[in-house]
Image (cartoon, rainbow, N blue to C red; front, side):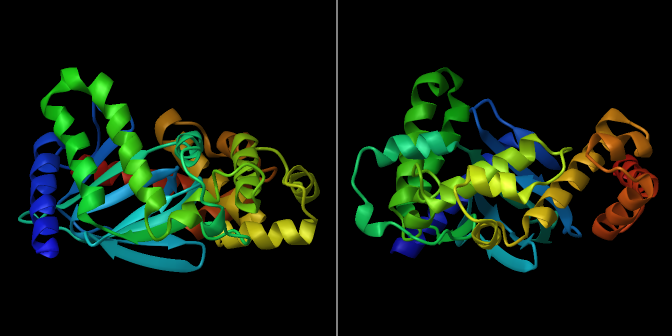
Amino acid sequence: MENEFIQFQHDELKRLIEKHANSEGRTNTIVPSLRFFCTTTPSEFLHTLYEPSLCLIAQGSKAVGLGEELFSYDNHRYLIASVHLPARIQILEASGEKPYLSLQLTFTMDQILEILKEFDDEENSIQQPECGLYFGENSSLLLDPILRLVRLLENPKDIGILAPMITREILYRIVQDKGGAIIRQFAKNGSLAQRISKAITMIKNDLAEPLRIETLAKEAEMSASSFHHHFKRVTTMSPLQFQKSLRLQEARRLLMVEAMEASNVAFQVGYESPSQFSREYARLFGLPPIRDVKRIRESFESA
């Protein structure tokens, strides 16, 4: 009976996303922090930057690469990103008859912290920080408030009052789920995971600055070796690999959106050598900067 009800919820969610999403690509909705994604074709690996968010697939499946790790999930599971993480994603199942359909609900750790104030969960605290990506099993308890949030698109006048309340309920269900302790660790003041999260924000905000492990470790109140170890547990990457991935993703955005020269982009994201930038860019994206941007633009034009 439970599985049948979950399938009924998924069917409604698919219908609503198809109704309100663009036929291809991402759609920002009038519900704050809620986005849809729809595509009718499988994809190669694409690079993205996850922000703290809940991601749920209504139809199809997707692979997620984080560092050397590779995960896959479909409409039986949801994904939680607790920190900003550069990742690779690949749409595995999509067609004209059954398009890939998903939603993303972004949130902040302050919202999680507000929920934690309502109950005592010390017995579930985690000493060692865990990976910033978590996959949980879908349930009718979680899908119910998600559906109610999406239904608000049918009644826009209710969004201002009801969307914050329903979002809070969704986050409550997440932190109460089996993996809730993993998510809660990133919101707790002073926890190892929260200190690593602050370091991630520092790297992201000072992208073009040289990476100084000692400074980051001091801010996190750890030794350099302990900081490196915990950082890799959370991101599956070393701090240097993490910064490099962020830099190259921002460089690609600047090349596409700002139409800047590759050498200027290299300096803006922190590279001192344009040739080194070009090599590392090609290593990550498969082509040197100019050829990569040309390929992307041609694919958009043909689409």
